[in-house]
Image 1 (spheres, helix red, strand yellow):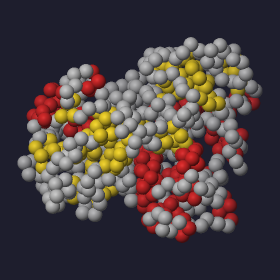
Image 2 (cartoon, one colour; image 1 turned 45 degrees about the horizontal axis):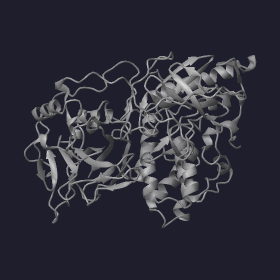
Image 3 (cartoon, helix red, strand yellow; image 1 turned 90 degrees about the vertical axis):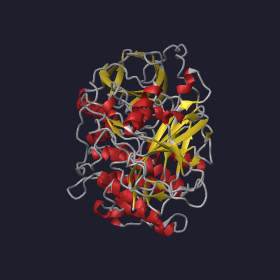
Image 4 (cartoon, helix red, strand yellow; image 1 turned 180 degrees about the vertical axis):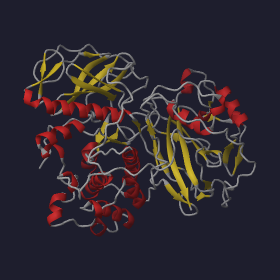
Length: 609
């Protein structure tokens, strides 16, 4: 069973170095005359406010176009449901089923296509594809997404030549497992994870899970075309023939993700799962690659590749725990589940934050003999937009239940979200921005959210940590960032006691320069983890110029700037900052509108004993 080469209903990614498309700042060039041949719409066709400017890819189940959004003046990817084996183009835009006997299959595939759009529109995670809007027209359906540029993980591995090291793989796994944890909490499963279904975005190499190919699976199910559905080596046995003893669930995605990492390490896939049922020829990589990676890392991959579900790592959170990443349930970076009905963007805190104590109970920094070597106390958050309580265990149902849409199927007004070749992690909301919060709801946590929400699309920032669960007195704080533009980094930390610290710049490093496209490992000096335990928020901001925080009236402690968080100070600095959050700081020696530009990303950690 092999996957057909033209099976491409996924979001198509323009490879880095491919022919250029119109820049986001300018409208597209005049469209060439329409050409016959093929089922794609002619270049220059308008679908609502979207003008088609190119074809990014055409597969057996859909066509992805490059389009220009004339309303918001941005490039987008527009995906059309068009199963070429079942339907044909009639006239300029209409899609018609070829034969009445295909009608039910076509309709089921389109329903699945729409449900997938609804599903993706409800999630906002930097490693999940965003859906701006979707609608039905012309006998078919469409969805509009950001235009992503990058390279598939499969192509990256092929070009790289040698196997990536453990740090690189852990940096890849951290956001991917967080994204899967988000959809699993809603009892939804990807079921199509493979190296060619993960892309690394240009400039940052941030991983992105492509859309789920739901229409492809439904049509394959109805036509009994397993070759369309499954990828040998990545598909676990329960996907071949589900039975009461072989249900699909979170463990199904665990297997496929682990198989993708196995491929990255070995250059080949694990033996097909169906053959392993008869004679299991799988050789544990904890044996074949001992010494090249840590034993715990290799053992976690082997466990996740158990051939039967009851022999396998049961959930993404369990997989993260085995990898040392910690549970993603309440502190996955940049995760938002968009509401299915109008609702406040986040709950107001029960009360205003208490003034920061003069002496922090955690003894935030303990002198270590040299300036700048300090113990970072856990710094967590006060109020998030959703409850951090663990979600109910997902059902073992073979497919996700339909989820109410966040928008009506008819074309809604365009969402005012800037788009660029790469989207800013956790900073591009799908929902309409809420009205300004009342002063009573002000908190440092809400300002963290505001910074991420108002991040500028032209400064793409990604940040991640190889480990998000850190042990007191045992682990050090280590993370990395990338930016699409040159600038300077600021890193703020918010603690469980509502303490706010500017970690970087510090007394030894008065500026943290960032070079566009170049990974930056931080911090420059060792920061061991100290008391107290609790959830952590790190806010990473990149600005074209250095920022000043003097209006906060903070004080230096142990080489770091401690900022007051009492309600009075917060209200004052918010009012003084005007249209931007005071957490961004003030530009030094800058009076142009560009002074307010910044990119931001967030890392959430859990500090434990």
